[in-house]
Amino acid sequence: MFPDYLPGPGGWTALGFYREAGQEVPVGFSKKTIGVDRVGINCAACHVSQVRRPGEAVPHIYLGGPGNTVDILGYQRFLFACASDPRFTSHHILKALAEVVDLPFLDRLQYRYMLIPATRKALLREKAQFAWTNTRPDWGRGRVDPFNPVKVAFLKVAVGDTIGNAEIPPIWNLDQRDEGKLALHWDGLNSDLTEVFLSSALGDGATLKSLPVHKLQELQDWAKTLKPPSFQALFEIDHTLAALGQPIFEQHCARCHRFGGEQTGKALPLTNEAWGEGLEGNPAGPLYTDPHRLGVWTPETLEAFAAYADDYAWDFKQFRPTVGYVNVPLDGLWIRAPYLHNGSVPYLTELLELPERRSQIFYRGHDVYDADRMGFVSEGPEAEHLGSRYDTSEPGNSNQGHLWGTHLSDTEKRLLLEYLKTL
Ligand code: HEC
Ligand code: HEC
Image (tube, rainbow, N blue to C red; front, side, top):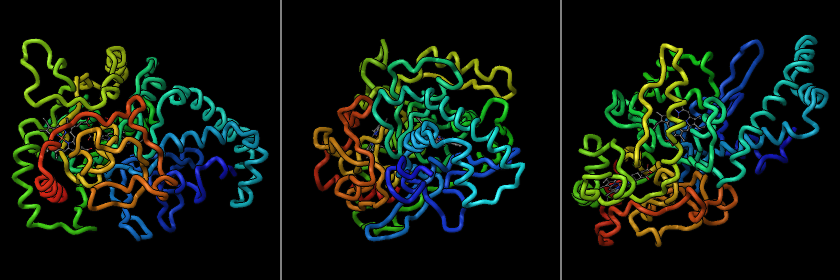
């Protein structure tokens, strides 16, 4: 009924969702009958990647990968716009429904007097709950502010001026991140996989009472089998160069980024000051990436979150604030683009350059991959047409910091890059 509220033609695909042939709903949506048929998002709305080689028509789909194309806030705003439209009435919607489905009389009554008015009301309520997103930089494709909506909807804590925009991370190799081995979330605020799964489901729309704890455990067991796709499945690697790049990685990067590295999975303080008193500066050198995402977990929020599920057997006990971002494992690194927690660096080649030489403005959300620069094509007419404009000068979008590797020679960078393709 409302194609004009979508960013382009193609229905849900205009928002970056993928439609498999023959499926009723796009990847990331599920249909369930609870009284009536309902459609809702699931984990795959965000944790599935789409990748095309230049010239390819149909993307490769990778379960557990970062949702590089999806515009989650765009999806919500689309629904809000529909609900605000004067045509969102039982009369108009039932007329449109009649063109595609022959509803029994009793169903029509239920839709007319209950479901359509209730849906409109719920969407308008949510629109009001999301008003804070209108006054800060857009999430854009592939990014979500995951915790601020939870504050508003469940915790009744004010968003204030915080900005939690975060790149959607992959969720593969979770078996190596379970049992507190490596902190989860960009800021490492929890190391308990079960709590992260439960809180993720709440973020997606479950409620305390509806939370399917046992099903989520099954999901978690299954998710632990997800592995990253290899770069070589789509592109070539020069193994001679990669072998020469490995020692460079071992020397400069492995301690923070290899599974089993001495600092891998720990939150690295953002600034020297954050190391606190008694420490003589940060031995690793300061990280200095954008601080905004860290500020989301105010003391008030943590307190409310800790108390939130007190009456339930499963409760949240492990959430804690940190003063930096996690030394993330780099598994499936090629698909993690754009890089860093805020997705501020489009290409891996650029992360190995000083911030002033990184793109200042680019477009996120394209699925065509540039194998030489290791990232999704982020400029040019197609990327600009499809993508969300990303301006690194906006709050929360800074591409500063993470200077490791920037001092290497061009030859060393070339070798290191080839090795990074093997991760
Ligand atoms: C609306 C998008 C969205 C949906 C849907 C979603 N996630 Fe996430 N997920 C994210 C984002 C964004 C992060 C990173 C948040 C941060 O730390 O700032 C994340 C982080 C995670 C992490 C931690 C990964 C890491 O490397 O630290 C796990 C595990 C996870 N999600 C599991 C799930 C599960 C399970 C579901 C379904 C119940 C789910 N997510 C649904 C967006 C989503
Ligand atoms: C002292 C620890 C440390 C060292 C050494 C280090 N990094 Fe990092 N790296 C980090 C942290 C912390 C982050 C997350 C920062 C953020 O997102 O703001 C990160 C993020 C990254 C990312 C982005 C990952 C993603 O999913 O977006 C890449 C790529 C990366 N580092 C590559 C390297 C390379 C290559 C080297 C060696 C030249 C290196 N790092 C050295 C700590 C380190």
